[in-house]
Length: 333
Image (cartoon, rainbow, N blue to C red; front, side):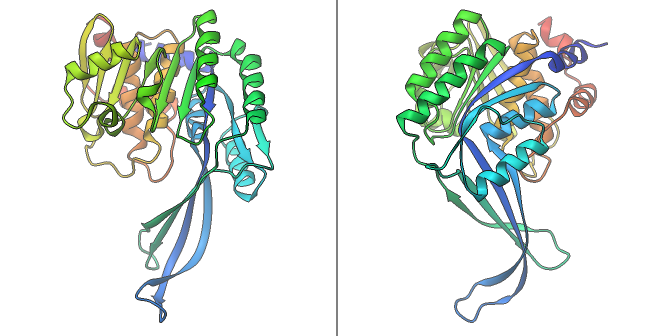
C-alpha cells in the first residue's frame, strides 16, 4: 500500500468537528419556453429544484464522502429551505443532532437559476441569496454548549465562516482554547474576515480572500508574513487554475500545480472540499505537505463536476495514482 493509500485509509477512523454557517445550495432548473410579452426576458418553465449542503454543510458532506465522521454544528431555520437542507444532509450521511433548528432564524439559501432549451445543457442565469441574520446571544450559547460537548470526540476542527454570524469572536476563541487543550488542529476558512482570526493551526483561503487582506499582486513573502502575523503553522492558498501554494513555519514555500485540466467545469464549493480533505489528512497524521497534495487532488476532482459536489476516497486514490507527484516524494522532500 502506498503512502497516500495508507493516509486515505485512515480517514475512516477520524471524526471532524465542523463549526460554521450552513447553507442550502439550491438549483432551480427550468426550460426556456418563449420570450415574455411583459419585458425582453425569457420565460422559464420550472422543471425541478434540487437542494445540496452548502458552506459548512458542504465541508461536512465532503468529510462524510471521504469515509470519515463529521460532527456538524450550525444553525438552520425551521422553514422549507431548512427542511430541504436537512434532507440533503441525511442523504449525505451527515448527522444533524447538533444543528440548532430555530423558528427565529431563516435558513441561508443560495438559489442558482439554471435555464436552457429543451434537450440542451442548462446555464446559470442568476443567483438569488436569502441570508440569515446574526444569531441572537441565546442561540450562540447553545452553539457553545454543543461545541463543549462534541470537541472531546474530534480529531480535528474545521471553522467555516461565510459571514452569516455563527463564527463569532467568542466561538472562535473557545474553539481554539478547547482544541489547544486536546492538541488537535483547527483549520480555518473565512470568506470575509480571514485577516481577523488569529491563532488557528492552518487556514485555506482562496486568492480573492488573500487579496482582501494583502491587496492584488501579493507575493510569496507577503503570504509568509501574513502566516506569521496570524499565528498559523501553515497557510494553504488556493489559486484556481494556478494550483496552490503552501506556506509553513520554518520551511520554504511549496507550490502545487493544478491537478487535471486548468479549465474547471464548476468551482462551486471547491474550497469546502479542500478544507475538508486537508483537515482529514492532518487528522490522519499526514505531514502538512502530504495533506496539501491530497487536498489539491480533491479540489481537482470536484471542479470537474457540475454543482456543489464532493470527492470520495476511491476518486482520490485514482487521481494520485494517475499523476506523477507522489505523496512519498513529497514526504521525503
